[in-house]
Length: 306
Picture 1: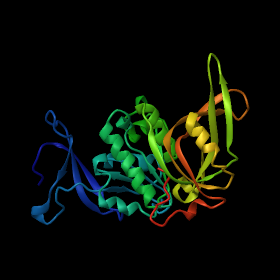
Picture 2 (picture 1 turned 120 degrees about the vertical axis):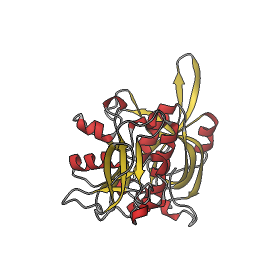
Picture 3 (picture 1 turned 90 degrees about the vertical axis):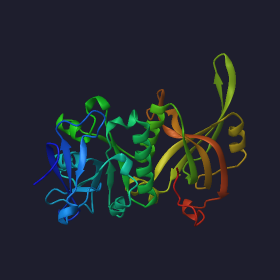
C-alpha cells in the first residue's frame, strides 16, 4: 500500500541494477512545490526518502568504458536506451558534489550532459562547472555534451526529437560559457610552449600600432579529455606583450601562466581571413625552466590548467 498523492513511481537503481530508492513524479504538484519527491519505506525496513544516484546500464554495455552523467532517472533511462551507453543520473545539479559521485572515478570516459537551462540558471551553471572540475581533478577523462536550448531542455528531449548533442572538451565548453556570460574565466597553471613565440607590431587603421605577443600553449595530456594534449593559442597585448617578449621563450619551455580563457582571433588554416577559437588572454607568464616538461611542476600542484 502506498500513501500519498497520485503520480508515476520511478525506480532508482544502484550500479548493480538493484532498486535502492523510488521517486514519485506527481501528476499535479502544488504551486511552487517540486514535481519529483522521494518515497519512504523506512517504516517497513526499506529505503528512506534520500536523494540517490541512479544507474541506467543497457544490456551488453560496460560503465567501466563509457559513462554519461545527466539529471534525473527518467532522462538517464531514456538516454541509455537510445544511445546504448550507460548513464548515471544525479537527483539534481545541486547534488553534483555529493560523495556518491566518487563512484565514477576511474571510468575510461565520462560525458557530462546537464540540462540546457544551465545557460540561463547561474546555480545550475555553477554546479555543472564544479562537477566537471571535480572530475578533472580526480583524473577522470571528461567531456561535456551541449545542444541548443531550443532543441530541448533535457538530453531526453533532444534525443526524442531526433537530435544529437555536440561533445566538446572542457576548455572549449568553458569558453562557450564565457561567451554566453560576457565574462572571462581564469586560467592558472603549468603548461608547455608548443610553438615558437612571435612578437610583432600590428598596424591598425586610424589607430596607434598595437604590440602583440603570440604563443601556443600545450595543456598536459594527463588532465585533458581522452588523454590528448590540447593546444591553446595565447595572446598578450601592450605592456604585457613587451614583458613576454623579454622572457626569451622557446618551443618546449615550461611556463607558469595566469590569464583569462576567452575567444582569440587567429589566421584561418587556409590562410584567408581570421577565425575565433578558444584561447588565452595572457595576464602573466613566467618561464620556469628551458625545455622542462609540464610534469615537472611542484608536487603540491595538481597540474590543472584552470
